[in-house]
Length: 296
Length: 335
Ligand SMILES: Nc1ncnc2c1ncn2[C@@H]1O[C@H](COP(=O)(O)OP(=O)(O)O)[C@@H](O)[C@H]1O
Ligand SMILES: [Mg+2]
Image (cartoon, rainbow over all chains, first blue to last red; front, side):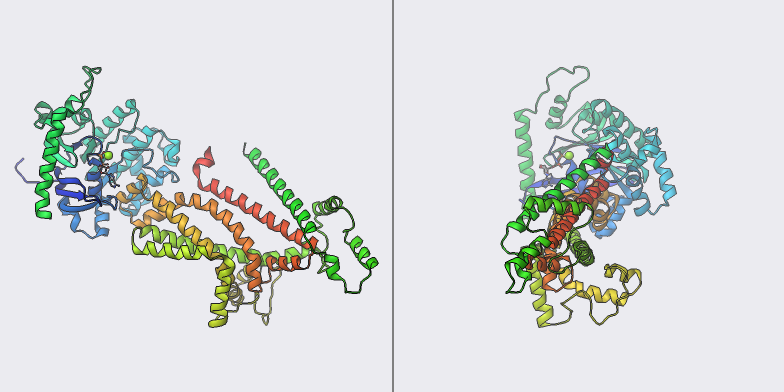
C-alpha cells in the first residue's frame, strides 16, 4: 500500500469541448490501478463513452481535448507522436464495445478479425496467434471454435459475438481494457453470463479494466473502485464498498434510489428529484466559472 | 433455388433483348431516309429501285421483314450490310474487340483514378485535400465525355501535339495479330512495343470516356467510405493500432464499395454508349465508329446487328455486376 506504484491509467484534469464551445468533459481526473476494475457510472449522455474514446485515441474529430493529461503506465499519451501513440494503445489496451452487433466487420470472417492485431500489430506468427485465440475462445466457453472462426458475424448470436470480442480483447494480454457498457445491448439472461465471464477473465489475467456502465447493480458486482459522472464531471469517487455503504454526493444517493433492487423489484423507481438537479446545475456552473477564468 | 433464380434471370435477359430488337427494327424503318435511294446513282429507274428493294426484302411488310430477320438471327445469320455488302455478324465481330479494349482501358482508368481520389479524400476528410478532390470531381462530372474528347484534341492534338490522336495503331507497323484483340494479343505475345503504340492511341479517348465515371466513383465511394469510417468495427480497428490507411483498405473499402459497384455497372453501360461519339472524334476503328457510318448510310441490317450486340453487352454487364455484388456480400451468399 505504501509503494507509490504507477497507476495503469491516470487521467488528470481532462477537459474536452465540442465545436460550439460546450464542455463535454469537465476537468475529469480518475486513475485505474494495475489489475483493478474501476467502474465509471452515470446516466446516458454523461460522457462515459467520451472518456473511453479519449483514452483509446478515437475521439470523433469534432471533439477537442483542451486541457489535461492521460498517462498509460506512466507514458503521457498527449506527448507521443500519432504513430507511436497508436502503436502503444494497440499494444497495451483493448476495447470491449457496447454493441457486439456493430463492432465486427460484416464482410470479414471471425478468425482473421480476432488474430489481426496479434499478427499485424504485435508481430506474432500466424500459428502462435491462432493457438492463442483458440485458448481464449475456450476461456469464454465457446465449444466449437473451428466453426466460429470460420463464421461471418451475422451467423452468430449477439451473446456469441460479445464472447468473441471479449476473447479478442484479452488475447493480446493488454494492461488496460476499456469495457463500454458491454452488456447493455444484450438480452437480460445473456447479460449475467457475459458479466460473469468478464469478471472471471479479469481475475485470471489480472487485467485492469475501466468499466463503463449506467447500472449501479453492475458496479457492485464487478468493481473495486467507482467514479460517478454527471454532465462530464466526476461528482464522487470512492471504493465501491464504501460508496454503497455511505454515498457522499446527493446525486449518488439519487442514482441508488433509482436502481431496482432484487429484494423489492416492483418498487417504483424514483427519478432524480428537482432539488438534487438544481444542486448539480449550480455545481457544474461553478466549475465552468472557475474553469473559464484561467482559460479566457 | 439458385438454378431457379438463374433461369429467371436468363428469361429476363432474353425478353430485354427481344424488346430492344423490336423497337430498333421499327424505329429505323419509320425514320426518314431510304437506304436504296442512297445506293443508286441519280438516274436509276423505278424498276431498278424495286428490284433492289426486293433483293434486300424491303418490299415486304414490317412484320414479315421482322420475322424473316428474326429467324435468321436465331440461326446466327444477321443478314448482309447494304452499304458494305458483307456479312453483318462478321463486320460486327471484326470491330467489337477494338471497342471492348477501349472501354476496358477506360474502365480500369476510371476505377484507378476514382478509387484513389475516394480513398485519399476519405483519409484526409475535413481538410483542404478533400475540398480539392470535391472541386476536381465536380468539374470532371459536369463535362460529358465527348466534350472531354474535344478538349483533349485541342490540348494535345493542336496546341501541344504529343500524342497520336487518330486511329487505333500506327499504320506503318507490321501487326502479327491473329485476332482483333490487338492490345490483349500484344501483351500475350510480349510485343510491348506494340502495346505502347496501342495504348498511346487509346490514351486520350480512354481518358475522355473515363473522367466522368472517375468523378462519379470518387464522389460516391468517398461518401460511403466516410460513413463506414464512423462505424464501431472501424473504431475497434483503430484501437487495435491500425493506421487510417490500413483501416480504410482492410476494414472499410470492401463494405463501402458495394453501393458504388452497382452504380459503376450502370455507368459502364453509359461509358460504352459514349464510345460511339468518342471513337468518331478520334477516328478509332471500333464498333461505335462503324455505327455512325451505318446510320448515315441507313444500313438497316448493320444498325440492327450493332444495336443488338450493344444491348447484349449491357445485359451481360448487369449480370456480371449482380454476380460480383453477391460474391462481395456474404449475407447474400448464404441467405
Ligand atoms: N460525435 C459527437 N459529436 C459531438 N457530440 C457528441 C458526439 N458523440 C456524443 N456527443 C455528446 O457528448 C456527450 C457525451 O456522450 P457519451 O460519451 O456518448 O455519453 P455516455 O456514453 O455517457 O452515454 C453527449 O451529450 C452527446 O450528445
Ligand atoms: Mg455511451
